[in-house]
Amino acid sequence: MSLSDITSETAPEPKGAKTSRIGLIVPSSNTTMETELPELFRRQSESTGQHYTFHSARAALKNVNREELLAMVDKAGDCARAVSDADVDVIAYACLVAVMAQGPNAHEESEKVIAAAAEDNGHPAAVASSAGALVRTLQDMGARKIAMVAPYMKPLTQMVREYIEGAGIEVLDAISLEVDDNLAVGALDPEKLPEIAQGLKHEGADAVILSACVQMPSLPAVQKVEDQLGLPVITAATATTYEVLKALGHEPAIPGAGRLLSGTHTTAAAQRG
Image 1 (cartoon, rainbow, N blue to C red):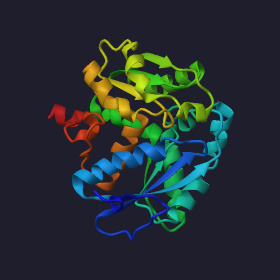
Image 2 (image 1 turned 90 degrees about the vertical axis):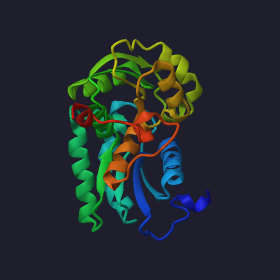
Image 3 (image 1 turned 60 degrees about the horizontal axis):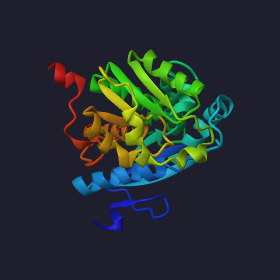
Image 4 (image 1 turned 30 degrees about the horizontal axis):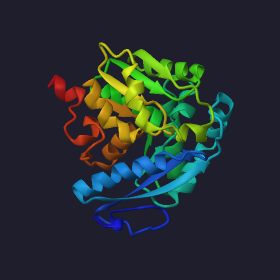
């Protein structure tokens, strides 16, 4: 595989039949989504020959608290206009808790705002927010009960829990790592997640959210924890990737990141026949 199979905004290539442009809106202090998503799409490229490029816009966020999260949300439209200048095919709004802080089903309005901003800028694009992707992916999987790990302080973890439960999914257990500095969240060691996940009360769960945060690194641990627990394991990053692929009309073919992205995932609709 050559470096041309997946590129960044620093090495643009003409968009052709086998190249899709993905726009990312990320917190200014995020160091994870622009590493985990390109790696996931690199694996997709290796499996399918489809190429992907990434083009980012950043909104200010240093500390993961309600005030800074709400301030970040106000910048979503500006970021969408900026990233749509690259004529992207899909925009991923990659700040899960910033959206959830606005209340139940807030992802629906956030996605509308971003889509409208891109269209008004003359470059309409499909939109997936990480908050929406997480709950919709769980629903698509047919998950009614889940357990989760989050890096946040307990009040924010509770807010995420309530948001997921507002989508009709029961949260059996939630582990809160209580880190509020966003750079510190990005520096957490994903190799510790299998041990942390062992502490989850997951009996009766249909799935596990290993990282309910776009900043907490988790990709190296997803397959390990899925094999360890015998349950489907997703993260904010893998759910966002799943929705981006759906928006592009591409079948997932990503190894080593859980059954959701492996191509063997069966949706709830298919299970019902």
